[in-house]
Length: 355
Image (cartoon, rainbow, N blue to C red; front, side, top):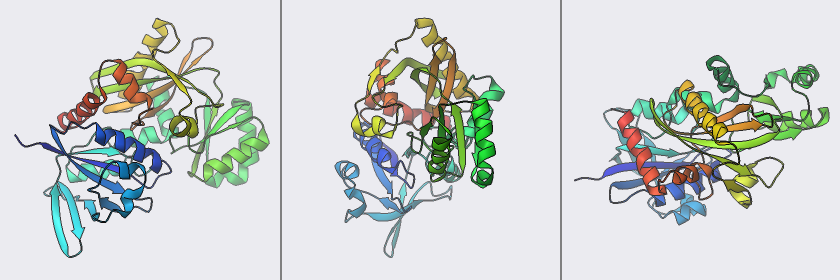
């Protein structure tokens, strides 16, 4: 029986490029090779697509871009092709693909753009579709969806880059409605990139300037004191599995990029240090949020639990980190799935969802 050919796409143009490389190595190393043939495609920070035949060690150390046998390539949007177009000088060839596993975090990978290309190509792909990816990536539109669908979340506000002439008025409004401290975030960014905690107006304006280097849209959120917890959702609606709830014992003031992917000093607790009924409510809300945003395949739902017990959703990550220290695979492993079984299951969900 012929093996299924899975194309793993990694790298990308976002500020989470390096995170993608770490996740991609873990995913590729755990794809069951008795069932799948693996095709690796890397996207450079400048947006160049390269068919990469080398080892995953060269992905993680960044040498993959200079690999001598790399071939420029692209996903064909032509549904009769259903594969990669490889352009080796004057030699143009087609590499047929059965399913794509995007391991791209942030813009141009997790925001619906790549998903749109894959929809046009007709190739099944892992994870959420165009709408869910776009909505969950944009914190403003995610919050609007949560409002409309009855998923509780923290107080928030937002501004656009063209609102900068009114920054004092905007600061007045944020201070009145949210108070200090508050978090300032780029609306379309992940892995806590560009996120700043502001304690006064000077820090607020500085944080807005930082956020605007990452996105045109900036979100303000009230500071929520309490537990920061996460829940993995796996499956295609309506057949969803919500994992046990995990908690981050962060080593920094908040769970930032350094903590998530570099230092590895934060501790994770599964289950979270919360009453069982609270954890059950979080799992229920995770599936409700997943369904509200029309997610599929996988997502990690992040929540705050206030000291008074109120549960508030923070965000949905449609392509969560898959590194060796990432919470999503840890949560699913706690349910009894090995990393390889999880990767295999996600690929199967993609192919089932395309039928």
